[in-house]
Image (cartoon, rainbow, N blue to C red; front, side, top):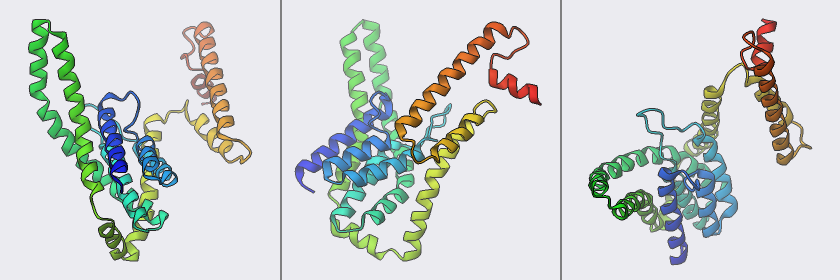
Length: 270
């Protein structure tokens, strides 16, 4: 890779690391991070395919209580860089993407360790901000806040820069040394991981009020003439109809209704 490409990749990784905390522009999401790395490296199509697949996996990742979700920022950037290195070395696109998907989960777990290290280092910064707040020094608070956020960006930028200097021959040789049963297993596992991520989201959302819309979405998606724009318009219309019915149920249902029209209808049939 050229020096300019490495610099752009490190910038994307730095933004992804910060967004893992900020959640404002979503640079840490696999679809965004992998697409941007694919764009700056000249492999846009492969980056989109990898990002879309990893995004399905990351849909089920969420911080719940004290449990911290796997690190999507490191998983997306590092797997995308490994994919780019493999593609530059002459590896087939499908094989490079499958390998990148397979290493995404271990990388996300490694990202958790880096997160703990950075957050431990940030503890003195919190005390420094408390001292600045006691003195009414708002400028110092802002500076410490920026430093803490930049630490999260460096957490991803340094591994990304290190991966960029891995020789293409080393990655290609490692891929060629893999037996067929391992590469086929990683391809199958990559497809299953995406399905598991989506299933985790469904499990969190599964209620008797939501299931009719879920089934209806599957039926509409089977109609090949409907574009994504058409499906989005149908989804918006269904949401507006549901909200309208719910408001009417609140106004006229009184104590007899639950406020959820679909729930009341289902209860009537039970």
